[in-house]
Length: 140
Ligand code: HEM
Image 1 (cartoon, rainbow, N blue to C red):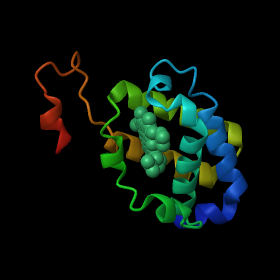
Image 2: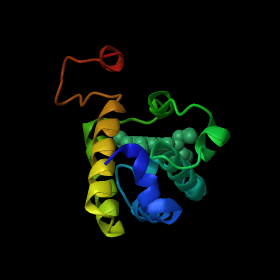
Image 3: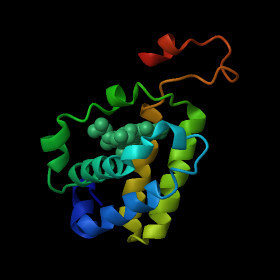
């Protein structure tokens, strides 16, 4: 299925369910919890929801409110290493499963999240790559 068709299938309520199931797990998560704004989790939930709705073929509220996504730039201030990326994906995959979407939509979302999360890694794991500097990795 085309990414632009996912919204037609899931609608506003589908994306709301997904993002709520994701954010429910955030406060108690030892890696991700501290990165998210405890006082504005609802705002964070709304930003991700609107972004996904736009990205998968729905209304462009995200662009109207936040402008061009520039996701990599907007994530620079968070320390995203492989472990953080993998945890984000773990929580999102659980949320997808809990949302009980049709298989082809779930597949589309899973692939998109895996690729985008890898693209957002901005820190090396010092132990895994002793010689690599964050600066060297930033531009590849
Ligand atoms: C790889 C692990 C990731 C981490 C640790 C992470 C962390 C964060 C944090 C802490 C925020 C700030 C919350 C807020 O106040 O809006 C944020 C925002 C956001 N993230 Fe991520 N994120 C990750 C992956 C992703 C992925 C894969 C996507 C793609 C769907 C994504 C999309 C967004 C969006 C759209 C925002 C709001 C940007 C804005 O308008 O300011 N993130 N992320």
